[in-house]
Image 1 (tube, each protein chain N blue to C red):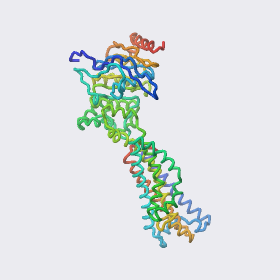
Image 2: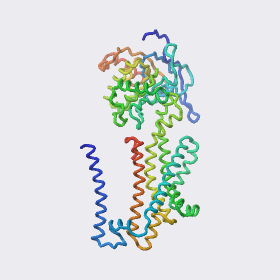
Image 3: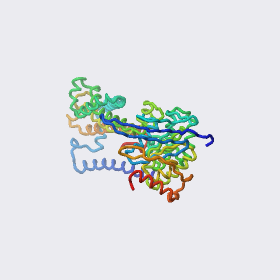
Image 4: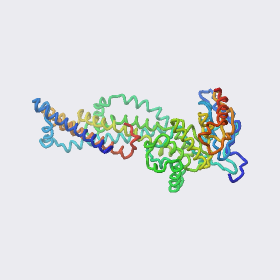
Length: 258
Length: 255
């Protein structure tokens, strides 16, 4: 980073989110406090019902919150909530009737960005995610992993400052998932984006994250937030390092699974 | 070879089985010594096309315009109503149950009433064809418009996209496969609707012609009429299939 960064890009302190259903209140997120620095890849890990998807939707500007502090953007890294978010979901959710290139272009159409430049950028991004030569294919002609690569390119095409990923590899088989983890780390390094990554995979969170935020369910609350000091670029054999085991054990303990 | 060869073989098989049926029909009548007024041979039925005063051309035009008119009316009005439903949850909640109930009415039973209301002729027959083709189109289109991935809507909304953008870029193209599946069902029904109308009260058309020649046991002409009605249906169905091929990506089609 060229400039000294003194302020976090995302700042959450004591964030609360309550859902109301037939008069009953249901606490979806409570006491979430963590900071994300520019260029970080933060993994939110926890069981279903811990509020990680809700938290992601708050970050995406899709939900409001009911208490606490919440801010995205800083003086050095301004953030425009209506155009600086890229999203990747568990399903690739490509539009079946569009070719891959046109699928990647969807966010640029919504934002009304110039067409020629966007196409060029989409091509570059398809190359970045390893899909050169697939621009004119339809989604059904691609494997699940390849579709998810296209979805990542789509999340990057409008050059957002923040990319939100909700269990993006949860529907893939174990081997493809490992491969996609390495790919994501490479894409993250090359694009320099700030990424918030939701997963219920503990090893995945430790392997990917510069920081891990642990959430627990019933009631939903934030249990821990710590840095992963494993060096970058990460390699698969780091999973056998002692410190890797320490990190995963720490999360297992927090989730009451030890 | 490969894919093209497979396709060619499938087409050849389909054509052969149709031809085989015609040949079997001819053999059955000739060797079974079936009287002509019970069942003519395919050749005798074909000969009816060139003999007598059947006015095939006029009758095809009448029946064809009833079928196509009723059908396209049903597509236009059916899709429009489904669109209105997708924009107003209130209207859908109010009128969808009513439509489902009305769909239970056997439309053929309305025939005599429609003829009372609209006299007989092309108009009431078009309306009967419309009324029978209309429901599957509304129901499938409404369903298609409802089937939108919530996450995709989130994706558009996270970029401050408008409802209109969600509709034009995701909802409408996503519903096309459903619209076509409804249109295919409706194509078959519209043909039946128009013919029932002609049976009930009419002075023109292939269905009317069938009733006329039935009196004189002119079975070859009746066969020819059925064949022509079927062909009109095939043309309509083919048009819909062709349009689907152009508009809907293979994987997205609802079989």
